[in-house]
View (cartoon, rainbow, N blue to C red):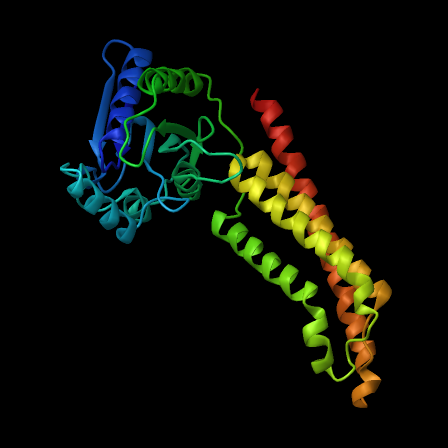
Length: 326
């Protein structure tokens, strides 16, 4: 059995993890195994046939895989600390973008290095993003994407992380021999959740400042809007907490649960507006627009219900697959 470990590293922490994983793979594969550990700038353009396991890892930058700009900033930090950056060219993101889709299923695992999350603040995951990219290229992930933690931006690794990486590498072999894989990643990107958080935060502010803009609606928005403010504010705040929690936990299950809750909250918010309907289009001499507005809200409810059912099905399929894979 042959394995390939490809890593991106600036300060050397991810390199140390990658080398420990490669050592663990070698132990698990046993005598005669071929395990290659390669810095991404020197990695081959594709993965040759016969590689039973491919492992890809890099540091988490700005909640995901590094980009040219974040790598440049990290290299500058390394220079200021008197260190030479390990990876001086492309990153894992670019290597994966060039990786062609397999004709047959392959087996892979992804990891990243990151600061340990503090309280509720999410650190994101380069490994999650890399895992989605590999799945798009017909690789099945043997295990969930893994974090290895550093004590600071430039390290060092937390105590015990190198040993844990070695054991993780050996465990990959057992998973491969059992043909055990994890369910496919949800398609929702962290950036989409950040966008939802920002949109709901802006909405929360606008809703609660209604007294300032209500006079400028020429009577189209009525004083009844005050009746929907508490409910809409609660729904927006819960949606924000929902997406922040999904980012902080970072697992596929958490993402799917967050999607279900977000869909349910959107339905509840739309239903409140439809029930109160704080609009009077007769104030501008166009009362017929009220029919269109009702139709739009009803359509939004139907779409929201369809989305909720779809998200529930995705969650059910995910759990069923997890149980089947043990």
